[in-house]
Structure formats: structure tokens, C-alpha cells
Length: 120
Image (cartoon, rainbow, N blue to C red; front, side):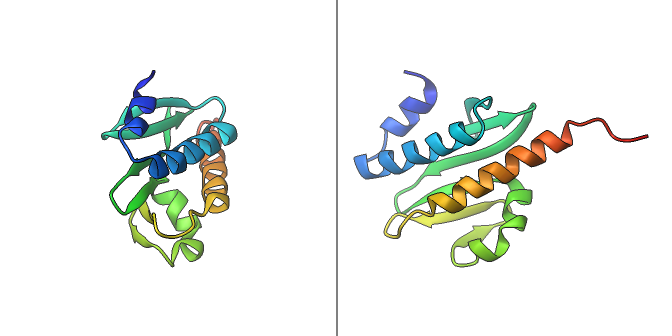
């Protein structure tokens, strides 16, 4: 069992199921991502840069796509409680897996573009 498995196992079954789905989305969209625990939560990196994080809480799932991911999806995220680089998906509402997929896909591209050499 790795540290992300251990993290997820600490939650109620319903929350575990949601976190496993989010984890699966991340690993499907970013199969080369490096998975770890950072800031006390599951964290993913691509191209040596942070990709996304997620965390379980009593009443919501926190999803952190860094500020660029949240700025680009500002309208879709407007119905959720947000911070500069975070969003809260309440556990008593349907989790927007399609939106999470799109955000991860976007972050993968941002990280890929940021590693390309700059034109002279």
C-alpha cells in the first residue's frame, strides 16, 4: 500500500469512492504523473511541476488545480466555494467528474507547454 492508498483509506467508504474516482481521472489524463503526498494530501506532478492535488474533508472534497486551472474554469466553478487555487465540491451534491477531467487535461497541457524551450 502506498501513501496515497493509506490516505484514502482513512475516510468513510463514500468519500473513499469519490477520491478513488478522482485519482483514477488524474492517472488516466496524466499517466506519467508522479504521485505523492504533499501538504498532507495526494499530489501529482508532471514535467517536474505541480499538476493537481485533492483532499477529503468532513463535508467536501477539496480540489486544487493551482491558480491557472481555476482561472480558466472560473465560470464552471462559480457555483462552488472557491479560493485562489482551490474549489470545494460538497459531498451532498453530485461530484462534477467531467469538470475535474477537463481541469486535469488543461493542467497537463499547461505543464507540457511550460517545459518547451522558449523561442529566441
